[in-house]
Length: 237
Image 1 (cartoon, helix red, strand yellow):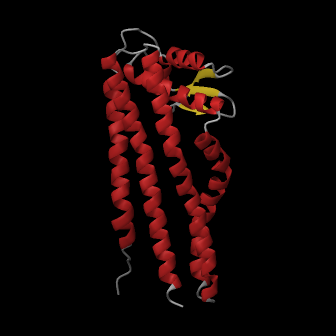
Image 2 (cartoon, one colour):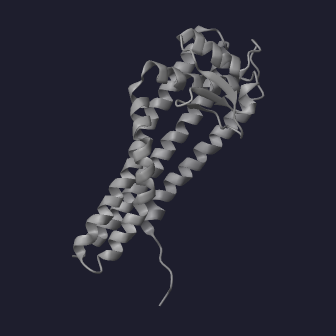
Image 3 (cartoon, one colour):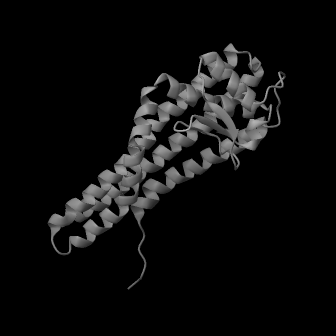
């Protein structure tokens, strides 16, 4: 009797989503690398561009600093800090300006009370707890069904906990797309990049946005797989 098990639901549902995610990640690195070598005619750096976008939007009390690690750029709403990676903060490349203005877009969302961002930040503690409890609860529920099928409800609670992570990924999409939209509008309105340069910045931001689409796809497929697994055990009663 063979001592191995092939999870076909993982292969059929999750693996294609993971491959899609890897393709999107590769596209981000490729576009960023390409447009990191194309510098803006204005000579403005990423940090300067972000500061200009903030000033135009009337957003104050947001500081811009340097973060560690490649493509580690992010906005921290708790500290009101835009952290830019070294290759973005001090570079005048088209890619750097696009990324920096995108993070400024998040800061503007926070300042203006953008609803999807507020909702995402609100559910972060819940989703963190849910992601940690989901798999243990699912496994516990399935194991306890050996004592009684009624314990399957524990596994369903685990699936619900995982669904919170999927919800987080879903809410992240509008915040990321909106931040990129704000960035491109600000870049154009402030003449930070020329028309040709804006095309490059848009490609970088579009590629980055697709990684969030891919993350949602992976999460949805994982959720579907877990639900199929639990329902399979539920039907045995």
